[in-house]
Structure formats: C-alpha cells, structure tokens
Image (cartoon, rainbow, N blue to C red; front, side, top):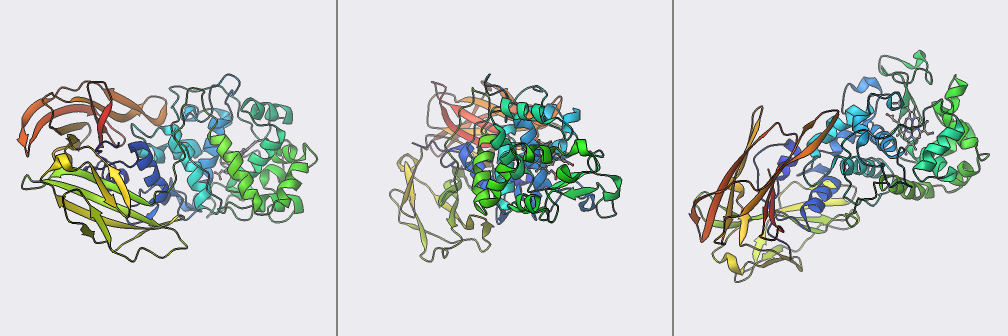
Length: 507
Ligand code: HEM
C-alpha cells in the first residue's frame, strides 16, 4: 500500500526552493520525481530540465556564439564517467566520480563543469548525481531525434575521483581498446558506442587545438567547433554514412584532423577494416536501436553494490501533489493534481474525469487550460481540493478506473512546513498524526561538497519535535533544522517504530 506522501511542489523542482506543497508520490518518490523530469519537459508544469537542450542546438551554460551544445556535452560527460569502470572489480562506471576529475587533461573542455552546474539543482535525497547524469543521456538522445533509452534509477555517487583512463585523440589504438575493455566493451561495441556518441556535437579548437586548428574560430563559433556530422544536433545515423561515403563532415575532426596522431576515430573505425561501420551503415534507421542498446549498457555500467529500480516509464494517470493539508480556516482538505498523459497519436480525453473517494459523491475534475507537451504526448492537469471529514475512511481514491491506496494517519503538513532560504536554509516542519507517540523524523538535504559541483546528501537523524497542538483529530508536532547552504530540494521523512518510511515530503 502506498503511504500518504508529500512532495515538493512542481514549481519547487523548477524554481528550486519556492513555496512547498505536499504530494502523494506515485508509485514512490524517486520514480515520481524522475518521471516528472522525463515526461514534463515542455509547457505546463515542466521541470525545466529539458530547457537546457531545447532546441537541441542550445548551449545553456554560456553564449550561443561559442558553438557549444549542451545535449552533446551531457553524452560526452557520461562517457567519460563510464569508461574508467573496472567491471571485473565491480567498481566505477556511472557514479558521478567525473565531477571530481574535471582538472585532468583527459577531461579537457568545459562540458564537465557546465553539466554539473546545471544538474545540481535537480539532485536531492532520492535522485543522485549519477542518476541525473544517466538521465541526461536518455533525455538528450530521446529529445534530439534518437529513440528512448529505458531508464532505471538507483545509482550511488562516488565520494572522490576514480582511476584515470579516458581515451584521448592521440591515444594509440591498443590502449584505447584496453580502456573500453576494462569497462566491458569489446572492439565492435567500442566502435558502435563511439559512432553513437559522435552523431551529436563537435570537436572544439578551444580544448582540442591539436585536433582542430585556429581557423575554425569565427565570430559565431568562438570556441571553434567543427561538427562531428552535418546534423550537429540530431541523433541520427548520418555520422556513419558520412564517414563511409566521405561526404559532409566525413566522420568529423577525429577522422579528418590535420594532425594524423589525433585521428582516433579513424584508427578505431579502421581497426576491423571498417566491418563494424559498414554493418552500422547497413542498419539504416536501425542504427538508433543499436545505440539504445549500447548507451543503455553504458549508463547501466555501475559499481556492483548498485540495486536498480524498475524501468521508469511515462505514467498514464498520475496523482501529483495529492496530499492532506489544512486550508486557511483549519479545515482538512485532500488537494493536488491528476495528470493524464495522452499519447501523440491519440485524442485527449473527451469524457469528464471524476475523482472518487469513499463515502462521497464523485468529484468532477476540470482541466487546466494549458497542457504540457513532450515526446511522449500531451499532458492535461486536473487540480482538485476536496474537504475531508472522515480521514480514517480515506484509504484509497479512484480516477479513470484506477485505484490509488493511501494512509492518512500521519502526514507532513504542507501549509505548515517551510524552507526559509537566505544564505543559510532553515526548515520548519509540522507533522500531523493520530498516533499517541511523537513522530520519528529524518531530514536530508543536498549540500555543496569539496572537489565537485555535484552536491552531497547531508542527513539529520532523529530530529527533535515538540507537540504544538491539535487540529481535526490530529496531534501536531513541529520541528526545525538549521541546514546551512542547500542546493536543491530538502526531504522530510517520517519513520515508524521499525524505521520504515511512513511519509516523505520535499521542500
Ligand atoms: C576513442 C574514443 C573517443 C575519443 C578519443 C573521443 C574524443 C572526443 C573529443 C576529443 C571530443 C571533442 C570534445 C570537445 O571539443 O569539446 C569528443 C566529442 C564528443 N564525444 Fe567523444 N570520444 C570518444 C568516444 C566517445 C564515446 C564512446 C561517446 C559517447 C557514447 C562520445 C561522445 C562524444 C560527444 C557527444 C561529443 C560532442 C561533445 C560536444 O559537442 O561538446 N565520445 N570526443
């Protein structure tokens, strides 16, 4: 059974530490928040994550005339994090250790700090830096012409840099293949993965002067980027065809560089007499499925102690911000949104939507006028706010033939919980419970850490609470935590006597 959940308000994810609101997390906090980033990309209630790669030529970290592209950067950052994995030892891979490694020569370029600067506000106690980095690959590929890579969560962040071993343009073939091999990729896989990666983006004179000469620098291409294929911002098979046919960018600067020792893609692609590149070329659009398989393996190369979630897919009918709260008059209400996802090929729901709760007439829901849009279709948001007089009977609610279970005996009160942010953040929270016992509370917050722009999670266990009165049959307990500097959403977790999570809220 789902516990009654509170969630940071959608604008809170977007706008960082805005006014909080409670949410029923469906099916759990991690899945709900990651699905939000994946699906709520544009229009109403968007998370803001995809703004960085909209359009896919966009460079979110600086001037457009630099000639850099964020969508491409994200994929390259994930590759550099992954390729130093030691799969035999079960260490490294997608663990965000790359955040600690940005000063290394093998990680030349602005991509690493650019990406972590943008990612950090999306990191919170249920979304690790490494999950955000992996998700960024899924989003770049899926939103820029490629196919959807199934995403699973659960990656654990490294706390320091890992081993060296990223191939550079002048790395010899044997060493390059040994780096890939350490990460579990054989020669055919390595050629395929490199071709998949090099369908987006550029090699820049700024960062790689031994690959691209200064003549590439112009007033609208200040970093001197030369595209890897003729469609710099489209995830497509063109890089393979242009390489094989010598057309367009002919495989890009890592094939054609003036500097023979910098032609790493040429050495790699020719290492089996182009057999793999010819096979990829013959796949036509099937190349996109090959890339899904290879990139999925890349982002799922993780330390052996990681336990992945199920695949997080778009949710058709999703309760959002669905929570008990007290209104301005102190009355108990059940409030929130239902989001309905309509696939691109289908018509939006025409029949009225009703929310059913026990002992009550069906409540008709009116959609907001502005929909959301994404590669998965359009989303319609139905807000609701229903007075509740018998919370003990509210063990489930029903929408569009679906049943969502919940418990109402303990909840974090959204309207009585605030995170005040100046230079330092103070969380004041209120918990309502029918229990005679004081609630056991844990607070977690993403905070800056030394050596990386990726936040660490700071935990405050067994936070002190005081009885602050009663309302509508609930005892109210308040508490306060002086957190210091926070970088993203802070969680409040209520635990039962056995240490099991009863409710979680984000603020
Ligand atoms: C032998 C292996 C590889 C070498 C030597 C290599 C080298 C490079 C270099 C030097 C750049 C230029 C970066 C810049 O100027 O900012 C680049 C760009 C890029 N690489 Fe690779 N790469 C390799 C494999 C891969 C793989 C396997 C992937 C991903 C799966 C990948 C993804 C990318 C992307 C997306 C870019 C464009 C970045 C941008 O435009 O900012 N690379 N690569």
